[in-house]
Amino acid sequence: MVDGTADHSLPEPEVQLEAQTEAVPEFAALESSANGAGEGNGEVGKGEKGKEEATADVPVLQDCGGESSDEEGDGGKGGKAGRDSKAAPDAPDAAVAAGSGAAVAASAAGDGGGDGGSNGELAVVPPDVVVEEPPKTIRGSYRAIITAFAVLGWTAFGGPSAHIAQFHKDFVELRGWMSDDVFAELLALCQTVPGPSSTQMSFAIGILQKGISGGLLSGILFQYPGLLIMSLAGFGAAKFLVDPGVWLTAISAGLAAVAVALVAEAAVMLGKKVCKDRVSKVLCVAAAVITFYYQTQWLFPTIILVGGLITVIIGHNKPIPAARSDIERLGVSWWGGVLLLLTWAALLVASVVVRNAVPYESAQWMHWFEGFYVTGSVTYGGGQVVLPLLENVVVHYDCPSNGEACTESPNTWVTQQQFMAGLALAQAMPGPLFNFAAYLGAIIGKFSGIAACWLGLFSPGILLIYGILPFWGRFRKWHIYKRATPGFNSTAIGLIWASVFTLGLQTYSKSPFPMASLCIAMIGYAATNFLKIPAPLAIIGGGALGAVAQATHMH
Image 1 (tube, rainbow, N blue to C red):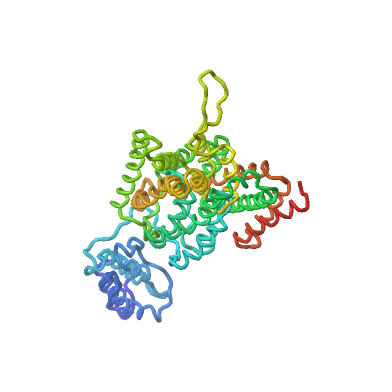
Image 2: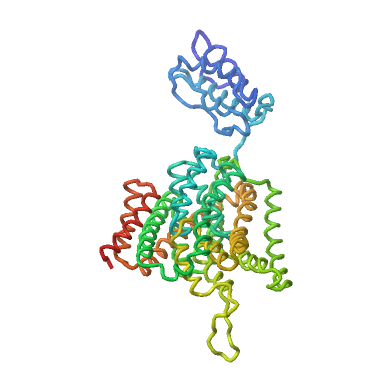
């Protein structure tokens, strides 16, 4: 600079930066900020103060910062010093160049982290990685887990899809414990491993908040009301349930109608937030159509995996979202997960071996446990898909070799009539349908039967979700998983859409007042979606409307 006038020639960058900072003291602080970035625990050093003084009285014209060192975990906050480098509106071009130089220097310094600043190298983010800020979420306390799941345990009617809908409304929309994407990832994960999906989700939500103990707390609170009621029913109400009466049927129909409305609301909300591009929307619709038409349980994991494979192939040239740290707790360690998965497999093999080696009269509870454990280990999604397998385990028939019709065996564990009566009650109860195992166990063997059957049916899914979460925490950072995640999530939402129509048709066909059930479903959807009435109150209202429909003969 000569006589206070900037020299617009472009000398070597080092010379220009030195000349400019000598003539314009206000901008010298920017270089100081660059040199100070990265000192301490990844924090901006003394230069931050100088930078603030430099920009305090200078109007902002242009952001000359770099973006290559924006992640605090890799380089402290040096990237911030680069982004905050500003030039005055009346400053010459050389001043802008100086600001850019400070930004580059700050970016380099930030890459040094907290170990003394820059090593002289720039932090470079790969061009195919899109850096995303993780959504702000709230970590639930033990008290919040108890409050939420104590209510859900008594009001979660309607089967797995309705439970998933209530989880989304409560923990994503209202409490903000996780983002829509994480919720969809968990849903896809629970759909691809054996076990009751809504039960596994209840454990996973607690695990993500408070680790192992949080998962046990949330899972037990979600299951115990249904477990208690179905156990009592198996002890003393089995005969009554054979003919439950019109009022129980009517109330159950009203509850089921509102449950369908909750599933529809969840499908709409998740569809809007997760299916953002054309490919994901097509996958969602395709998954819904296929699973609605071919209602077989092996389709659940298959179609989710195929959806992920499709987005990996289609999106191989698309940018990859950067790894996010929005998951802090995954329960057990990686080795703990391996141990739990091995435990599940060992119990599966051992139970089958023991059942075949030990006579029924010598160890009845082992036979009960084996039948329910194997069923829980091969059932995907939960809900109604487990019913034919359970019936095959507990209802025994004698089939003559001459081709005559099979008759119920006198040695059957449960009669066909008892099975159907308990099923009707289980579908009207809150919580997982797998609690039906407690009813069957009470009939088969009282307290020992409840323990063997209930633990046998639930333990595979619980062991698997605790064992698989540490692996999920690792492979969700892999590039191939990030490319597959949109496909996983979209097809998982498609399964919810399919359940809307499946449950809707079932509710309509089994209701004592089909048209009134449709009206109750519409009222339930409007109440939760437009009037923002809490889901538990809407469900209770649905039961009351069912009773009104019966009383007014709306058949």
